[in-house]
Structures are given as structure tokens and as C-alpha cells.
Length: 112
Figure (tube, rainbow, N blue to C red):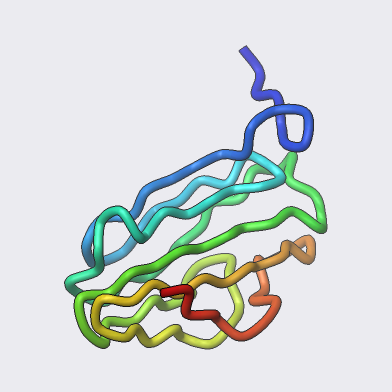
């Protein structure tokens, strides 16, 4: 069965663990990365595997909540500045695919 991609289907959602390397497969034009439900207790590195069917302009929306000043590091197939957390707070950032990497589209925003 093939995936019905956003905007005609739902966005994909992936959840992060509390720390360490995070292997994320991007197969949809919009992927929401939930790093809020499981709060970071250590640094997290986002390593992406991007499907050949993903085109330039695809979006990755990242939410990350930290226990302290843990970091979210952009690893494989990503470009941008490391995000440093604030204890008990959630930061969000949007990354856009340029055909090679998901590139941070702006400064992370603290939403709470």
C-alpha cells in the first residue's frame, strides 16, 4: 500500500526518545517531529533518511521540550544551528528541504 502524502493525506508524525541519536525516516512532504511528549533528559541528534520521493519544499516541523539545557543537534541530512533548551520549556522550528538537506528556516521559538 502506498502512502497518501500531505496535503492530500495526513502529515507523518514521529516521536523522539529522551536522548541520543534519533533515526528519522522522512517519507512525506510534511513531517511533525514530536520531541515534546517525551521530554529530553540528554542531548538529541536528529539523523534523517530522506525518501527519494521527497521533493524540494518538503517541511519538517520540530517540537522539543527539555528537562534543562539539553540540546537538539541537526545531524545527517540537516543544516542549522544547534537548539539549546530551557528547563521545562518547548521550542519549535521549521526546516525546509532544499533537495539535499532539511535547512532550518528561522530562529527556534519558545512556545511556553
